[in-house]
Image (cartoon, rainbow, N blue to C red; front, side):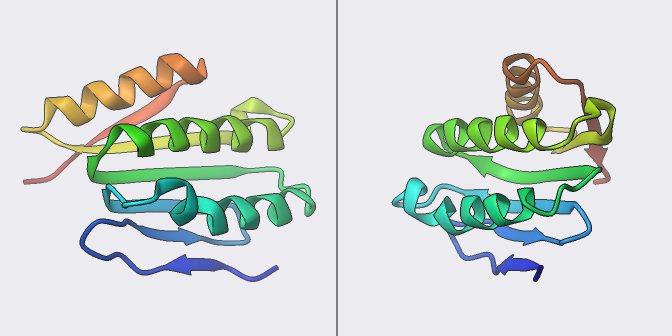
Amino acid sequence: MKNFIISAEKKTPEIVFKANGELRISGNSRPEDGKNFYKAAFDWIEDFKEFGPTKITLTLDLDYINSVSVRILLTMLQTLKQIVEDKKAFKVIWKYDNNDLDMLDQGKILEKSLQHTFEFIEKPV
């Protein structure tokens, strides 16, 4: 299984999904066509699922996320949560700037929607 990497651009995040279960999405997520942009990531997750990973850590370090990306991200979180049998082995880290309470709130909303505890980390200034 190969790692999956997409470089960040002005409106799209960097995505680094490693076969060892360390996944990261960072930057801005406001693609013109969110469904199309994230399709390759979902395809990788489908292949990843076949390897029966026992642990997944998803780090979300987003500066901005639009409403379309929020819905897509929730679907991705739900998919990843279903992959590991031991839900304690599924970890979500939500990073946010200390002066960006909207991003913190967005993480809390996703945490509640997913019904899975996130680890919230305030980024240093």
